[in-house]
Length: 117
Image (cartoon, rainbow, N blue to C red; front, side, top):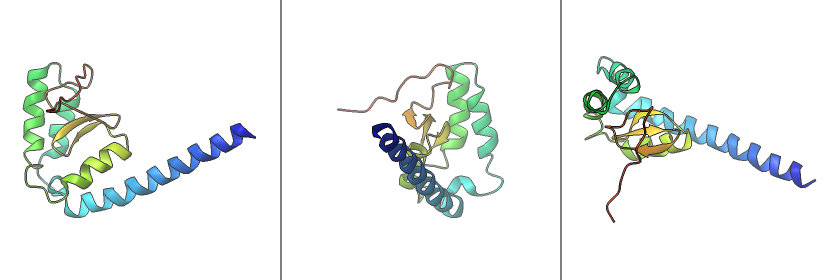
């Protein structure tokens, strides 16, 4: 009986995460700076994901993340990246499985983003 309750809780949490991520994604594609066709976002994100070293990752991230500076939905983007367990560039940072990382980090060699105390 306990296992069934735990399973149901996990299932409901997954349903909630998927629904919340879908709602946030709609906001991002309708109002996000990166959603504008022709920005080069997708290519920059691919370059970042396949970067062989930190220098190349930083260059690729810079090309994409410049759109995040004045984006009207940057907070929603960070929420989406966390909830969706996103891996890629979003909300001014690099994300690996929903965790925020330094954009200079290559996905294959992650270093957590440091925050000021």
